[in-house]
Image 1 (cartoon, rainbow, N blue to C red):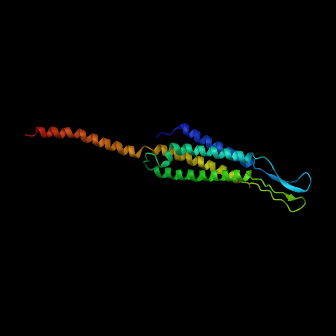
Image 2 (image 1 turned 90 degrees about the vertical axis):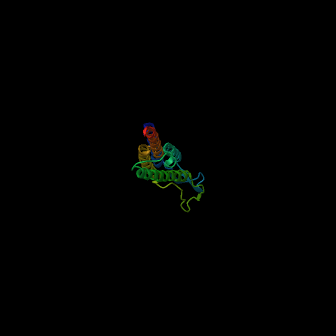
Image 3 (image 1 turned 120 degrees about the vertical axis):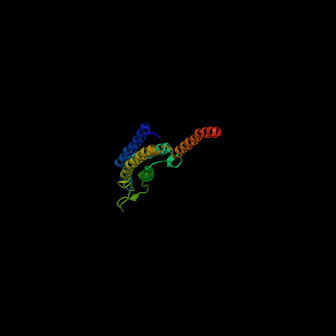
Length: 199
């Protein structure tokens, strides 16, 4: 199977798009501050924008589509014709590597998006105990961005090696069998001719 430039462009572009969304989600994390209500009787948590959640969801789908493209083309390494040559081990390694980094990035993106969307609803007494506002800790989306880049590297190398090694192991053996059968058929007439000419 030849390496497709279009597939590489799609995979890299979607991974980079997911990376940009993850970085944007990290920069736009929802922050909160404790403010009094209009009667100065209670305090509540006032949150900023929820853009981080939207960026996180967009990154999830971009990364998912890219991963589906790679493993759809390569048939997830399990349902293809088979790999030949010494590149099989490398292909298996980067296949596992791409899956581990993909799942790690998706987990961070999903957890960060859910946590960022959660807002503390209860109120505190004004002048009483300090009200704690739930917010997403720093670094969750940054970790997702780093894992997204690693996933891109693993997916591209896996696709490249798989395309070079996927010469069709079953098909090659089938062609060898056909060639041997054809060779036997060409040799049979000579044996028959020799038998006729014997005195």
